[in-house]
Structures are given as C-alpha cells and as structure tokens.
Length: 276
Image 1: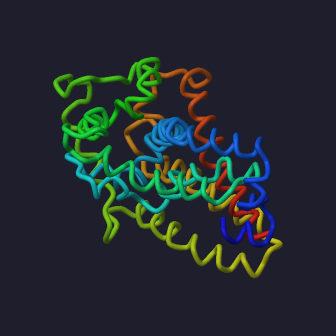
Image 2 (image 1 turned 120 degrees about the horizontal axis):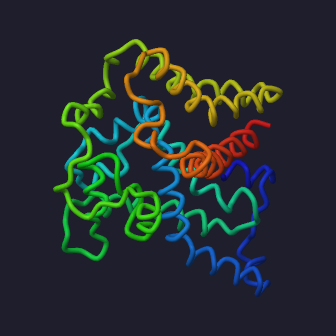
Image 3 (image 1 turned 120 degrees about the vertical axis):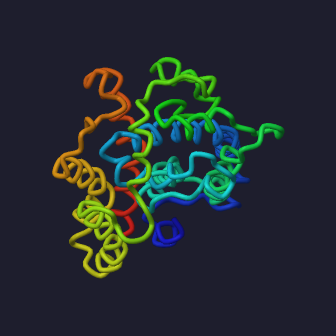
C-alpha cells in the first residue's frame, strides 16, 4: 500500500485533507466503526472458501493441524492463506481514497483478533468457543459468533462438541500438510509453486509488460493449481467436500463467487497495480 500510495497509483487522503472535509470525516468514522463487521464478513467468506477440499488439502490443512488452538496458532497459516486472509485490508483502500489510519486499524485488527479467537479460554470478553468447535470438527462454524446467522442458514452451525457427522477415519486429513519435506509429489509441486511466487513478483517489477499475467498467477494460480493437483492425485473426496451436498448453482455457487470477489479480485488488483 505504501508503494501504491507513493506512486499515486492509488489515491490517498492526507490528514489535512481529512480534517478540512466533514463528509470525508464521516466516511472515515463509518469505516473505522465498520471494520469489525467487515472483517467478520470477509473472514466467513474467505474461511469457507479455503475449506473447499481442493484448497484445504494444500493450503488450509496446515492451520488445522492444531485441533486444540492457542493464541499463537491464530495467525499460523500457509503463505497462500495469508494472502487471501490479508486481502481483507485491500477493501476499501484500493477502491476509494482513504487515510492510512484506516489501513493501520484494519491491519492491526486482522493480526490481533485471531489470538483471541484461538485463545482456548472462555473467561475473557472475546472468548470464542464457536471457533474452538470448528477446530475440533473441521466442517462447521466457519465464521465467528457475529456471522453465526450465515452458518445457521447454511446448516453448518454447531453449539457443542458431542455431535458426530464425520467418519472417524477422515479425522486425520489435516495431517497431510507439513512444514518440512512434502509427503506427496503433489504437495511438493504446490510448495515449489508457493516459493516461486516471491521471485516471480520481484522479477515482474522489472518486466512490467507481464503485470497482468503475474497478477493472475499470484491471485488465481493457487486455486487452479490446487484443484488440478487434487484431481491428479486421485483424491477420494469430492473437490467440493464438505460442501458437496450444496447446490453448485445455489449456496455453494454463491459463496464460491463471494470468495473469489472478496479475496482473489482485490489481490489481483493489488499485484497488478504494484507491477504495472
């Protein structure tokens, strides 16, 4: 964002401009107040998106190795997941002139909130048994208590640990992703792809004619590659598991489109503007 602001590729509101414009002040107050709500909504959509089996297998399963979470596990995740999770901070900053304070407030909120949500304690103001159940059961409670209405609507809301919907033989699937030597050839390919994204962006900064193709590779590539490798590996799960019972052109399709819009599109625009 600093690069985009300093190069004037993205408009910036200075402190003087903010204080001289009452409507601008009102807009900023709105976004500061709306940040927790926007972050909750984005998290639900993004989190559900990366739970699609093909993406979960190579990305989000790393985070789910911890079934009994604690504060530091909140932000412990695969680099690809970091990209989609922090894409939250790109809205509204990429699309409307804002003061850097909004960026800082949103970014700090993104970093600190997962510690509370993964605290494992129930005696503080932001305790989150809701997400604790998610880590224990995998396929429920994709949001936070603030977005429970979405889980209720989708039939993925759970209030306790006692229910059983997943066969015991499938509970080990989070072990498939490790930091270290890949356990399978397809995991090795995905890890190599992830590592190559950084030098690709560095190279692209000196070859700006490739901005669109590199931005597409960074933003869309991880999704496409995960689905391709999932198919090639002969995975016994549906690529949409655990949402395979949802209508492709109904609930699943809506949230898949929302995940692409909330996570992939802002990331593409950010990388494209950065390189162009």
